[in-house]
Length: 368
Ligand SMILES: Cc1cc2nc3c(=O)[nH]c(=O)nc-3n(C[C@H](O)[C@H](O)[C@H](O)COP(=O)(O)O)c2cc1C
Image (cartoon, rainbow, N blue to C red; front, top):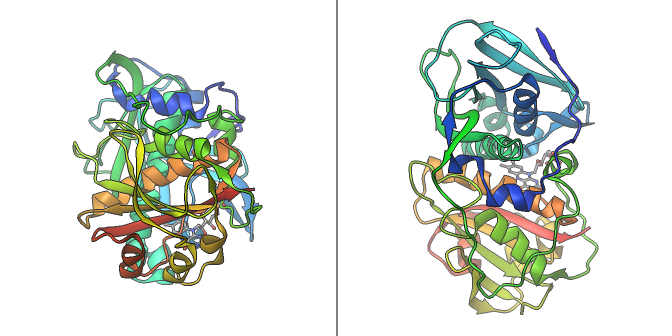
């Protein structure tokens, strides 16, 4: 067993900076990383950030707090750590450790890899078939947590499939290592949206502070804050998260109710031009809340961000989770509150938006 130093925010970078210069833009190069770097990346994926209802709440959200993921690390070149396959355990707020499962070698580019093993029964026993989508969304949340933290640490990262022979059920691994050449550059076009404000805290502070928020003050959200949420997370040809298997599948809509500088209505966010295009005018928040099984926070939010995909696929669900983690951390950084909403009637949400795509996620957003 390897006890890791308790997690404490230390890095200066904000979500805006890290999202603009993502870890996946760099080739993963050889060479060791430190145990502290490994610990921080794992914490950002699945660390315990609070205790409630007798259990740990984690850095990534979980449908009904069912927590179907178990994080592991494939360790190849981490200072002071024997190579092997380790289970990551975070039993109380900010404390964490590694437990050696097996020694061996597994191919991969990084000094280590985060493996997100799935125990879907924890979620499907509560939510039935719908639970499988939630689990894949949670894999996306945790992966993007790891990717963002790797970026804040000045490391490179890439998302891949899990190598065989680990003995766990896992689709996704995040390879993390030193930075090689920068292969890609992320640019967010100026567009028509106002410049976002500076975040009120660092990325690591936002990881620690992130919680699902369902009570909003009722004050309007500013358009510049909406611009921050959307542009940092999704804006540009390259987004804050990598294109899975080479492409992006998730589209994004805004149902505005109480946004200063934006008339109530349904808008599509266009990442390539960083702009909002109106689909229909009017206040649709109440109808959207009905479509979300009457969840009141959807009706009371200043706006709702709705993620959809043209084709229904498992990979789009993982991607929606990556976007979701970005929205949570961007909102937290800006002093806004949000909550991931996965419980809704798909066809009713699509009809509120007036689109023929499949809705994957709804994020009510408001001032706290
Ligand atoms: C896939 C998914 C679906 C969720 N669906 C809902 C929902 O429909 N309504 C809701 O209020 N919260 C929902 N949540 C939020 C969880 O209840 C919340 O993440 C969990 O209680 C842990 O709290 P935390 O996010 O503050 O850490 C969902 C979370 C996830 C990851």
